[in-house]
Image 1: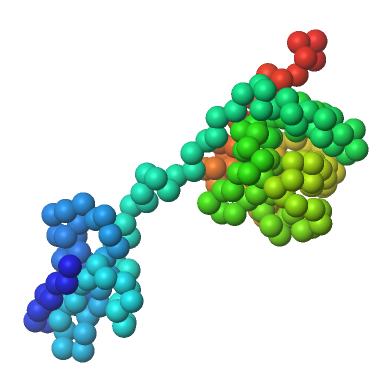
Image 2 (image 1 turned 90 degrees about the vertical axis):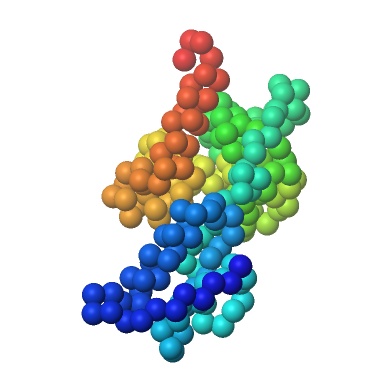
Length: 212
């Protein structure tokens, strides 16, 4: 698609306002399944295209994300989870964490998929970002033992940092410790983090023994 919209400058209209009107018309006329790029050239002509890479073009309308790009949860079974129980117990004992907390984080993060990779690049069972993984391990994040030990070490660090406040530690696990600090030692307002913390806590509480 390539559109030229010739305009004459009127006292009450500027090129940007005309451009906005043209773009609005295009959006209303059709579903924008591709990015729309545009510019106003030196003669006052508005140029629109859906072909990227044109000199001087800026994104005017961004295409909506494809449903296929959304992260799809990986289904797990109790049999899948049970094979990781030895390293979960090892990590909980090494870093003084409740195994139920580790199980809850793993379930929410990756559904026990050791090969999981998020859209943002988080890796493995506990979905560690590469920079975080390097801080807490020199192992292979697709190796279940290396991943769980690194994730547990990071979680222990966060619990120590936030004085065993589990909500803040989980918020930091999702959004980063600096985000929690910048939020005044509260859960940041990111929708994903606001959803993540109660999901993990609910899973954790369900996993606790009945007497707890």
